[in-house]
Amino acid sequence: MASASRRISGYTANTVPIVSGLMTSKPENQSTTSADPANDGQRWKDALVEIAETRCRVQYAKLFNHFAPRLKMFALRLCDSNEALALELVQDTMLAVWQKAHLYNASKGAASTWIYTIARNLRYDQLRKASSKADVISAEDLWPVLEAETDDGRSAPDHLVLQLQLEKYYDALSPAQMEVIRKVYLEDKPQQQVADELNIPLGTVKSRIRLAVQKLQDKIEAHHD
Amino acid sequence: MIKSHPSEGLLQAFVAGELPPALALCVSAHVDMCRLCQRDVQRLEAQQAEYSLEQAPVADQAPLPDELDHMLSAILAMPEAPADSPKASKITKISKHIHWNQQKFLLPRALQQQVNHQPALQAGESWRQLGKLWRGRLAEHDEWRTSFYYIERGGEIPEHTHKGREITLVLSGSFVDGDEVYQEGDFIYRDGSHTHKPGADATEDCLCFTAVEAPLHFTTGATRLLNPLGKLLY
Ligand SMILES: [Zn+2]
View 1 (cartoon, each protein chain N blue to C red):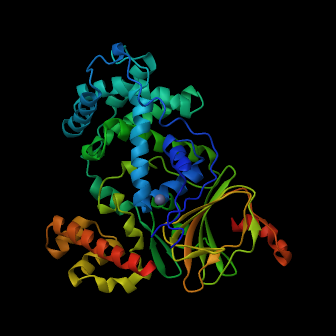
View 2: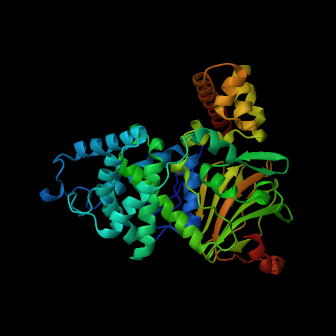
View 3: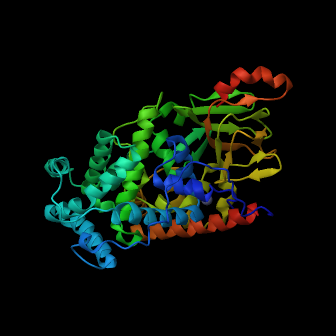
């Protein structure tokens, strides 16, 4: 297709300078724990993992001491300097960090990125609740970053194509793959339950799904091009 | 193949937490469906976290101000959640699909969260028919309305001009606007300067999600009579 990489433009809202300032180094007296930012990053990764595994309050307090004041500055900016809203955002974020530390995946990024993303998503929830007219939103309305990684769907956009309507593609799958796909996606069963029903390891369920999704994606892309 | 993505500026504003929530929802749902934008967003989030948190001018050793000190005590005083088994609890509670016309559509994660609060919408019961179109309203936020649209093959929305921004995210089937045909995952951004009459492809039905800022204004002949429907439609 001629316009394969076309991007829709026209957005004109103000954005913060994402890049500017990134390269400035910290004044020396501000980093008392380590002069090396890379070590710092590792330190907070380790802290989060330890918090998840041992519920260590001392580590959490250290993490809180580091991030809460920084989050507050960020939150004040997002909340147009509304102190009450900003503190609510900090509290909700840091509470989520304490309670959901087990959902942090150190291989996917820095601790600060995870915490930042939680705060940003909670800010959108806050805005949505404040502006919403008709819709009912529960208190635990957390965005995907705080969902348990219950299946491979977390970051696999391909799954959208797995709808009944697309049954015409299913003949690309082996019977074993189809069986797993049917149970997980069409019958909405947890992967562990499917593993139990079929008497196979959870890892096999996951790998069958991965292969099946790949096959479907290839086939569908071939069809659409 | 997804061919139409949010602009870099839109992704940046999304990452920075600066979009109206309806628009943020559209971007987030697209990102769920789009590997390329996932990569961009992850990169921008890492940069923005570094800039907003790590490089914030805050001294680590300073004692916490009172309000944060109290917050820390309050958080640590919360009862521990019962032995964390997120796998068991979450997955049964969240349904991932929306039902329409005896079909079942798997939604991007960002939309699953929202739709779960509205059983009638999710079951296809609160949808409103307008010719070959059905609309299921999700929410109204200030000037924004978010909705699902089901457009039967060959159906179109009468020609209209926007008064504000309109985002369409194609969830299933093909969505046609002028000479362009959009597919699953495509993110289509329009602003007030644009007149169009989008619809479904002639060969298949289309399900999409839209966020519209302010009502549409219909432009052609008899369809001006439909103007009052603009509000119902979007
Ligand atoms: Zn994209």
